Amino acid sequence: MTVVEVRIELKKGVADPEGENTRKALELLGFDVKKVNSIKVFDIDVGEKDSASAVEEVKEMCKKLLANPVIHKYSVEVKRD
Image (cartoon, rainbow, N blue to C red; front, side, top):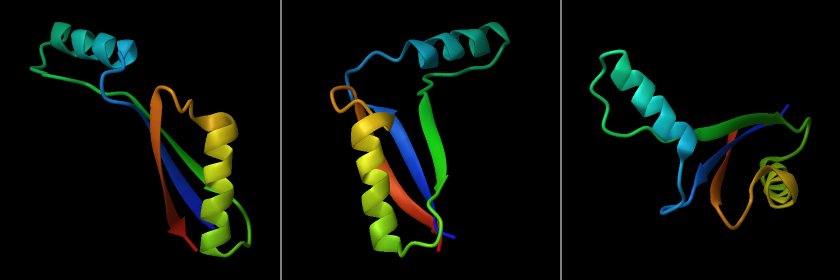
């Protein structure tokens, strides 16, 4: 079983309303928070594939569905081989 972690973040300069609303809510609860960035993390089990082909397949998933190349950057890392 090969599990690949994908982290999808907004590119620098792209507004993050979810992160900003979370920061405001935390401040209302009394926490001193300077900034909150929202990210998505997916753990994808691609079955019995070697690490290199698993990473390539998951990168293709990012290009086709998981990430919008205009506003997102992503990283792909094998968690378990």
